[in-house]
Length: 80
Image (cartoon, rainbow, N blue to C red):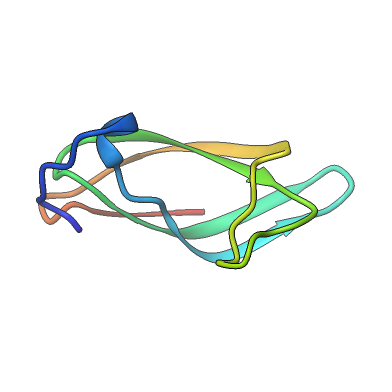
């Protein structure tokens, strides 16, 4: 929902869309895209969980990785 003006925690920023997520014993790989306000810089943090809820989400139990993205004029950014 790019371009809307939500209010709430983190201004209800969108969550990233993951294309690849892998964790090994000492390495993590996360690839995907993020849609948000144009020209913004955002830190995305990724966490792992042993279980998920009925919607397929879970509480972040273990920090995996983070990356910083800057959205282009259309509010899009990719990361890897």
